[in-house]
Image: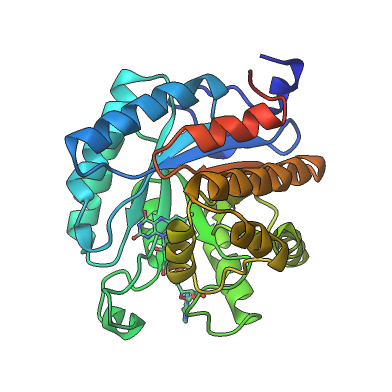
Length: 305
Ligand SMILES: Cc1cc2nc3c(=O)[nH]c(=O)nc-3n(C[C@H](O)[C@H](O)[C@H](O)COP(=O)(O)OP(=O)(O)OC[C@H]3O[C@@H](n4cnc5c(N)ncnc54)[C@H](O)[C@@H]3O)c2cc1C
């Protein structure tokens, strides 16, 4: 490993992610995984975790299917990572479709297992429906979950999501910042962004946060494009995300997914290089359960051999 690895903070199992992401020292890195649905997918994921562990992430996070579709798988994967590795693991907690008693039980189970960090999210409406379906929900917004966790489990360090390019249901681009501030004022200790492909969007967003007095770390969400199909799926999931013309030229020029992957990894490498040069608080890699793109970005930057 090269000397540059000092930009990667050493993780300490079981400690607070909020404390580990410390802007006075160095940027954190973290990885997001999703619960696998088949044996083969599980093997790929466990291999990826093994491959990525030497990068010393501050934490790894595990996504959660809205409506509880993958709740058990999320729980099982979180505990497996906790029990079989030294990594700090952060479950995503999605509040829609979950009542207070059930949420209390789920968080309590995690807390009993020594999980001390969570990413509090609302979740998306089911396909074909809008957010009106959450009107009568016990937790209509992530804010309600954040307040619940901080009241019932004050020792848990809570993170929340944010959207440099705006969330698809944003009431408006000024009010959304006040709503974000409300999440932070309710006890959120770190933020992680939706993926973005133009760093300008991120820098501008962080500046807007700081203007409002949001001073907690903001982790930059990076997702390398690895196929045209994958890019189209990202665009669907996150309609606000802008794909810069330069990137699209590269993708158009590439023939076949292996060249598209090269272009995507090169693009993400430039993004990470620029973010590090701008003293970003941390970089959160959306890994899609693959290790190669993230490892390659680190190698390209001389951060890993
Ligand atoms: C890093 C990250 C990880 C994610 N992981 C998962 C996952 O594991 N599982 C999953 O299902 N989804 C996940 N998502 C997607 C997320 O659940 C959706 O984007 C969801 O639509 C919004 O979640 P939120 O926590 O940002 O919601 P909220 O903070 O509740 O915001 C939702 C929308 O409502 C608006 N809003 C908030 N409060 C109010 C109010 N009082 N009045 C009017 N409007 C309001 C906000 O501006 C925003 O537009 C993730 C997203 C990110 C960025």
